[in-house]
Image (tube, rainbow, N blue to C red; front, side, top):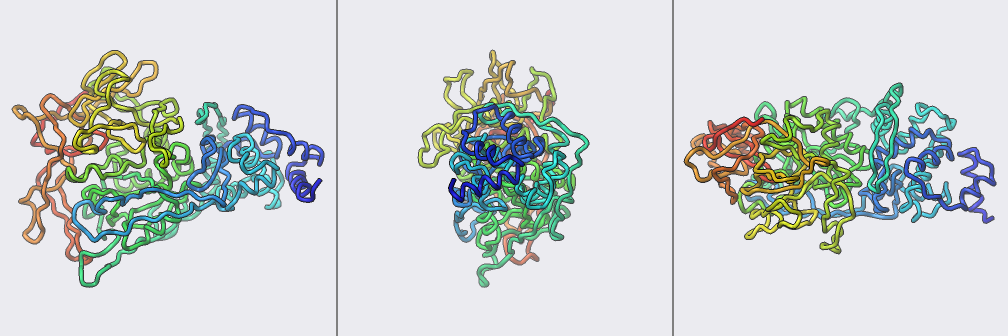
Amino acid sequence: MPVRRRTLVAAIVALAGLTTGQAYAAQQSSPVPTPRQQAFADAAKAYHVPEKLLLAVSYLESRWDANQGRPSVGAGYGPMHLTDGTLTSAGEHFSGGGEDPRGDTARPALRPKATAASAASPDGQTLQQAAGLTGAGANTLRTDPTANIRGGAALLARYQHDLGKPLSADPAAWYQATVRYGGTAWFAGQVYDVMRTGESRTTDDGQRVTLAATPGIKPAGAGANAPETECPPGLGCEWVPAPYQQLDPSDPTSYGNHDLGDRPKSQRIRYIVIHDTEGSWATTLKLAQDPTYLAWHYTVRSDDGHIAQHVKNKDVGWHAGNWDINARSIGIEHEGFLAQGGSWYTEAMYRSSAALVRYLTRKYDIPVDRAHILGHDNVPGITPANVQGMHEDPGPYWDWAHYFRLLGHPLHATAGPRSGMVTILPDYDKNVVPYTGCDASAPSAPCPAHGGGSIMLRTAPSDDAPLVKDIGKHPPNGDATMSVYDHSARAATGQTYAVAGRQGDWTAIWYLGQKAWFHNPKKQPTAVGAHGFVVTPKPGAASVPIYGRAYPEAEAYPANIPAQSLVPMQYTFAAGQRYAVADTVRGEYDYSTTFDVSTHAIVRGKLKYYEIQFGHRVYFVKTGDVVLKRVS
């Protein structure tokens, strides 16, 4: 036996208490294909790791998914998210994209984003470490879920051994090893919380895994927040400030990368905007600190849910591409990629982000619904010319239903199945839509089969009918596609629409000025009944304009502040159509166009708008142009 082989076997003997013969035999045998649940049980037994702990750690890292052997944004693989520090992953676009960062006025061109290697886990190359401990090859650990789970169990046992602690059957004795595996005390606390509450789900390759609840296990303590941050206690947020800096001393309008404000005293914070970074943690933090780029309020790391805050919530980030939404919102970036998001928007990320959003919604009295917790892909363009360039993140693989459960506001029916309104609510795991374009090198190739939170909309109640049109996203003809990046013929989980018709297992909604049909069978519904309010054009009006921002009337502006134009969008809201109302918004404008904050002001008018779910994005309509009706 070669010396290196003896060393590997000796490590396993020390960690798992096996005889040398048993350990060597274990290394020579190929993993026997087993259901995912059995793989956890076998690995836990082999390495003397509590099975519930192993399941909970894996759930936080991957929700027990295998991701078809593809790496995460942290270069991690498989159910245990074993990281390969020799590999990199890079992004494609970022929040700024081609948009004006403020979304209202011309500004100096900002530097396009860079790409960089993803940050690996705290131990850098856990996949290579697991290979050394188990004898499995690196490629096997990447692609074989059973081997990957054994690798994670071996690492946990190694960490426990290195801490000088016994391989106890009590999960409570493994807290420090769990901290090392996940990288933060917050991660470890969430592991224990998962064990306390239990979880069950079907994985991306169709295997049911269950972790029974253990109410007696108390979540372990978490890290302290940096004093500058605005986070709930115990989340362990760090402060990575974005610079407020004048770029050209001779030009007061040349500055970056956010605006100073006095919210909510000056203006109510009404929205939270969920983004993904399309880049690594390292790249993201560099961009947030670049005065020539743009800034948002928080970034959440994929691997462990760690959060960095960049901009105070009283200040206005340049993150949404719509200045009116910027002025009324908090922006949260999530490390990840839209086309890979279904597998690598990790449970740790979801839980950390949800803890932050629960804190923010309570602090600023923000409604917890999909009209106020928006994806970047739900933010409207400010004028017809801006629609085409608006962003698509976090995309169809973001699990809104799971996210709202974590927020403590699970999405559910609020009316009967024949109500005049519906809330989109497909079963995420079963809702597999055949998107294309996940591989940038083959944009027409099908994406890997994966569940998702969006449904496709068609011009007639048939799977063969064309997709509905979006003349703003795809001018001039509006032809939508099945690209994972194209949301123009999609409705997303949690969005509420007015019903336009029903036929068999199909339901139609009013969407961008047209009837949009989706499959909604009784046995596996993709929408549930909702109650609330809708608007229709006032009597005698053939159609009414809709807007991408809720600005005051011209008369409200003082002489020293230019009145902002109200430009109707290119869509038609015609008589006979109905759209769901989410809120009433007063016309306001945050005049912050120079580095000198003494020139800044909030303009308030008398004009009021309804926020409506008009398409995939929200829009605004003047209250005086429409009639409000209750639907139940």
